Length: 107
Image (cartoon, rainbow, N blue to C red):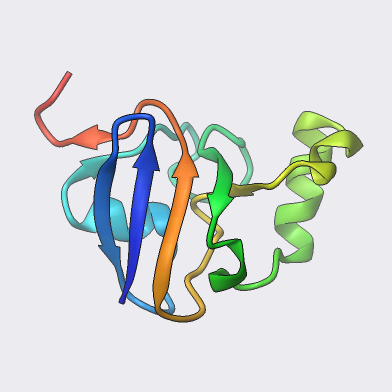
């Protein structure tokens, strides 16, 4: 498992290898902002990777295409991923910055 730390609130979530950041968080009862339901087309789940990006699988062509279409070519120069598409490749610690993530029932 990988440990995911979600800033700015310091939420810690265990993510199994082979699972996406957002998908695993949702399975554990966390709310993660999304409008497309994890289909990788809206960029609402866009997250800044602070550290541990090397523990994630390489960005797919589909993810890259969505980012450029929705946010412009310049977005690829930033350390960002769609949390619904970013799959954990191996164990370790990953820190991202994504506001709005919270435990179910919190407002």
